[in-house]
Length: 237
View 1: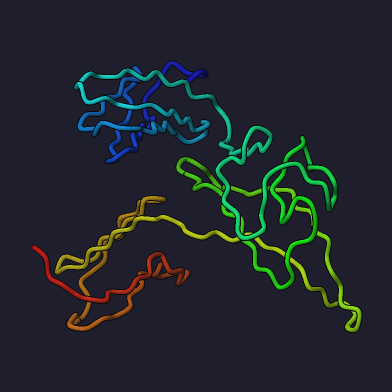
View 2: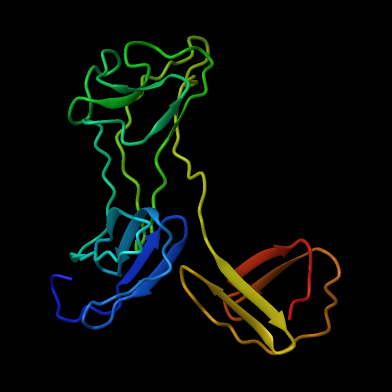
């Protein structure tokens, strides 16, 4: 980290055929073993610092690799630049990457864009989707999405105010890990985004022999802290 001499608390995650992590000490030292050979992504993240990703690989010769990582203060950001390539976006059926010759006739910035048909209209009654690469939001606080999108809306000639075109942005998948344990000692719950252990008193007898829904609520506000569904209750030691 460039603004301090205490380098502790940086989480370093190695993602490949398996995923292993470690946290730096005050000297900034971390050590990760058990990584399987192959292509790797190394992430370094800490609150109030920009997340760093380094792509590398590990051979089959058993040799160690040393990766020095510098974290800068600030907010994380993803920026997609379409000038050199399509940035890993995938579009169907008429989405195309390149320089537009129809529509607005130029990109919001630069030359290249993603557009539904670079040189004309898209097919009538078409449902087109453009998918971004997966974004790793680890270390982000209150992430926001910003993009520029140009529309040429086809309005109804018979019904004022009705339009036939449009678009929206959707999040297709959110990966989140949570944990809950209920036993004779009470309830323990935790989540990866904000870990919280909630001790409770032992409640009334409840026989878990069929699928059921459950929720853990804060007593004063009534806010739901955890909610889940057990489809196949099992006892584990």
